[in-house]
Picture 1: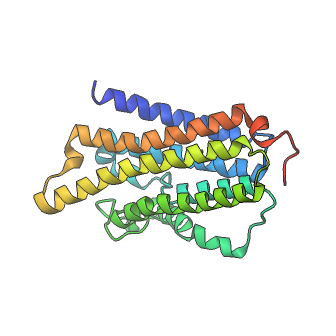
Picture 2: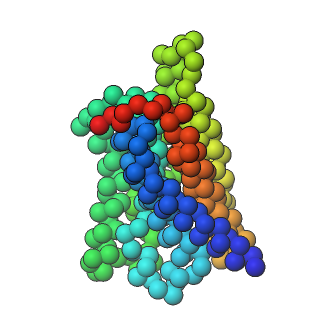
Length: 252
């Protein structure tokens, strides 16, 4: 039962992310680019959660090749959240070449998994390698640092948008996005605490917390709750989309 419950919650998060993410590609209200980006965020988050589910259930130990399936998109998620928020606030924004700097590591991560999936000779035997920026300890550090950094960028855009609107009635979208950002920071903090505890326990006490059922479940569920929070926001935007963003034509 202690293992079954986290598995069911993780499966529910995967299903919700894939379903709601797919619906964002068909969403008619709001900016189409912002909708597509958030749909990508949820779908990539759902696939990354599937990787975590396989790890939690021990499938990656039984089937090591599954470690290298190209469904791991941890470095994409904070970047996609940032551009969704930015374009939601400024639908007239046009992408520039300078924006590519945000996608360097995410694209590199995708290329890495495609290469090691297609060419097994490039795989690291243990799967994760500490100094690997795409799948290892360094990648986890980039993941944990990327969320608060990009949430900060989002908050700066939110404050700027509020100042620009001044005393005019603030759209409900600002309120929803503010709640979304607060939740993301809270849940990523829990994930960071668990990851830091695992590192310190192994470094100074040689204790492998990942081998403990309670720890594996807690760490897996910390990302699951973050994904569910993203799904809740997405569901609200789908249901109340025209009220949040106005029933205006899509911005192409």
